[in-house]
Image 1 (cartoon, rainbow, N blue to C red):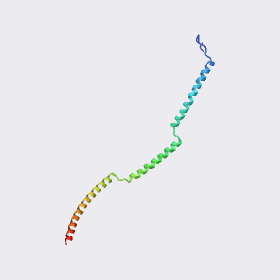
Image 2: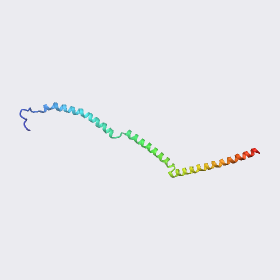
Image 3: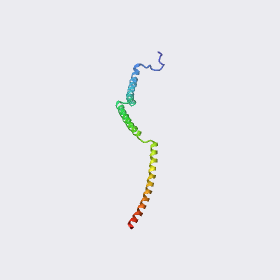
Image 4: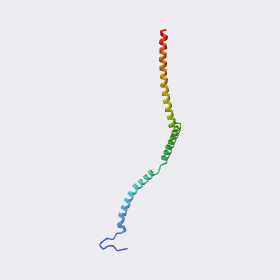
Length: 120
């Protein structure tokens, strides 16, 4: 070991013990909150069993809902079928207009026949 500097007091272990005790107490005071935070962050990092069970139930429910929607979607008409339906409806509309005009003609004819019969 080297000799202490002239004019400086030599530090002994007994002189350092109070400082070491204070440093240990400070470290202990910091260690507890750090360990609590570490435990909390691990709980946030890993999933709990209840959380996993809830997630699995939600996924199963969503899978059932998707299956129902896919089943319903299979029975929906295609774009071509809808276009054919629109064309048929337009054709029926035209047929109804022609029928209305024919009925008007029959109504006029029957009206004339009624007047002739009433006059006789």
